[in-house]
Image (cartoon, rainbow, N blue to C red; front, side, top):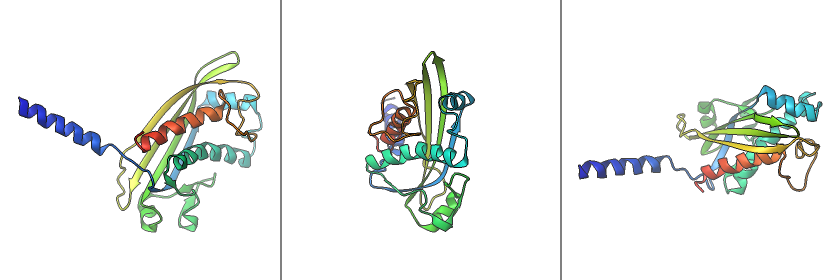
Length: 202
């Protein structure tokens, strides 16, 4: 029985070690990005700024700023996140200008040692007068060249209370020197911070 217990402990330890990643100083290139807004979240945002998704340009800006929150925190944690345009003409792009390339094709370019897909989901958990609780979920699927099999799927879900006032969209509709608590950008940044901490196991 003691031998079985020791073997079980070793197997668990090995499994945990296998699932530990440290992408510090690692090159990472984005190969796919998807942002999903729940019906309630989109309605809440549009109520506070009816023109935020009115044109392709403004919608692209919103998509970019959500992505940029993650890229910024990756760089802050010492992860060498390449610009999302790094594939240039070697990749096709979606309507928002983000790369849309199969991992096998990305590996063939030799641009990076690691590739990743990013998915973000924003939804409303609950809403009351002047306030709401938002859920920001993020999934990052990393690949290590030359393999086309995902290393894992890193995910976080962060709930943040926000204030529904004229500051709610600061950082999206106008620049802010500091991101205020209770804004959508602060909710994004908290999720990005948590995701990138998982990426460096801190």
